[in-house]
Length: 141
Image (cartoon, rainbow, N blue to C red; front, side):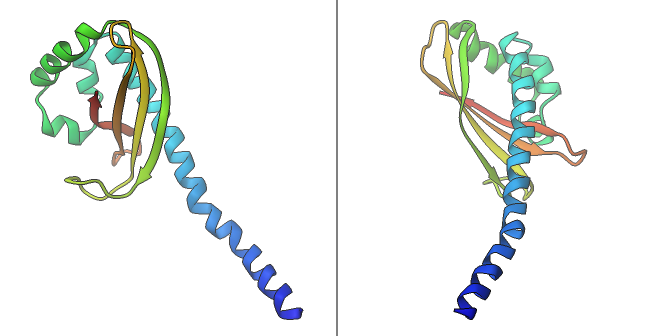
């Protein structure tokens, strides 16, 4: 019986240690969601130039501003205004295919537009060297 109690006490002592990384990931996800929502406002206003300027290093290195603006205009313009948007999923990661290791959050939003009722917006946010979460990838289907 004494060993069982010792084992239970030992396991309970580990809970704060194990909860620490989970809590940090939850905080990272919440910070990334806040940044994502602010960035999505730019898309909703069709301010594609500003969305590129405020995006992360990886996105800006991958696509030129002019190309970004042109692609988004063609993609987003016909959809009409956003009717609703809600977080579908949020995942924390430290690796991303084709990207340097770091802190990432992948967010998926269920989004309804005026002319497309069921869309999924996927965003990859990376914690930049300055400590801010910025969009490194954006996809809509």
